[in-house]
Image 1 (tube, rainbow, N blue to C red):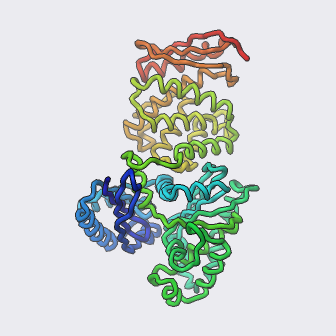
Image 2: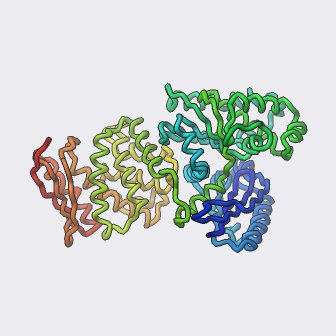
Image 3: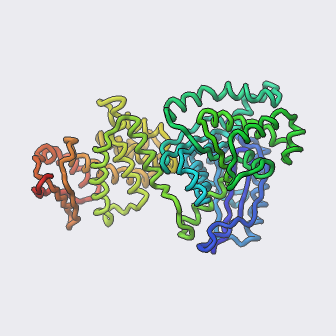
Amino acid sequence: MKTFAAIDVGSYELSMKIFEISKQNGLREIDCVRHRIDLGTDSFSSGKIGYGRVEELCRILREYKGIMEGYHIDGYKAYGTSAIRETENTIILLDQIEQKTGIKIEILSNSEQRFLDYKSIASKGKVFNKVIEKETAILDIGGGSIQISLFVKDSLVTTQNLRLGILRLQDNMSHLNLKPSQYENIIDEFISSQLAVFKKLYLKDRKIENMIVVDDYISAVVERKIARLSNDCIDASEMDTFMENVRSKSVIEAARILDMPEENVPLLYISSVLLNRVVKVMGAKLIWVPGVTLCDGIAYEYGEKNKIIKANHDFEQDIIACAQNISKRYMGSKRRSETLEKIALTIYDSMKKVHGLGKRERLLLQLATILHDCGKYISLTNLGECSYNIIMSTEMIGLSHLEREIVANTVKYNHMDFDYYEMIGQNSNLDKEAYLKIAKLTAILKIANGLDRSHKQKFKDIKTLLQDEELIITIDTAVDITLEKGLFHKRAEFFTEVYSVRPVIRQKKGNIN
């Protein structure tokens, strides 16, 4: 059993949960402390967090450190989200906090943050799996933005981030001197156009049955005040009626009815209007409020990585499904991608002793094969650059920004001459480790691409064998592969440069069915 602390430095709250994690009982929350601190308003409006709030943040973190010491924790993770992520002086701020508190805060990209939120929902196990049997949307409401993710047939098909977070909306409305009864119409004006675009691009004729909500205020209301059905699922119309009644009250009255601090009520109003509008766009009938937070996802991932908890959902397949849907959106060839994937992963697996990469990098290569030709939707001439721009502009939940950049560069240099570190370093923040991963994955993808240069999927089977300083690639086909052999040399040169291994094609002339 491990004792673990998860710290979420959020846009409007600093929270910490202490967990006991064991193989027998999974995650068990044993303590939770929360402190309201509005970091987001400063960050979103001016790009920096004020001195007073930084001092307050450090003071509370020192208190949290004392609590962790009292529990004799085995490990902790502290993550900052959009409020810190969007500051202009992030590195200076993080160093200052660590020096003053001894707590190291890591920054989550938006996709990493939402993926952990998603894992916190999945930690509910059977309930989660049952809910997503029908077409389902996850609405993750944060301070800076909201994330909408769609499940179809148990698979995550798309996820989109909209800069419509409750603190950002509150900041936009703060100078309008609104009454709670006016929130609905004004927020509707802010968000309706973006939701309409989302519906047109991603919903089309889909009918979303269920909505899963992750936030800090609606969850509390459902838990305390709304008559619940089984497993915290409530009818969408019941939720709407209750919240409409709440919004008709003054802030003081609503705080008393809901048993929450007055300062939280305006944020609840905004959350409830956001939920109402998204539910109407989706046509959802049932809302599930699992009552989880980012801290639950942080702890779940810790238990998963340390092999204490066994994942009951295939998160890797969700990342792959997202990539497949991006490829489909940009008219990618499914058959071609499947052929490239088979060849590239076969080569990758046979080169384990040479490339020194792991399971995660194998996934990144797989994503690169799926997205290898997405740029042709924009330009056949500038395929590499266009593919890079599409991948970097399209979020894949579960990938960090750095991982997305590795995939994007691997696809880019599959179609272009490789730029060396001195050149790449001028235009990005890639470190040498990431650069080497790009080089290694690109070398493999170039070889795979060369083996299917005609795009006709000529091979019945392919086998690879690493032998001395050669990679023997045996192709089972009776079809003429003169084109592949003729153009293979140039791609093989880069592979040899990266690995000091020479790829060699051998043809086994089997029968074609």
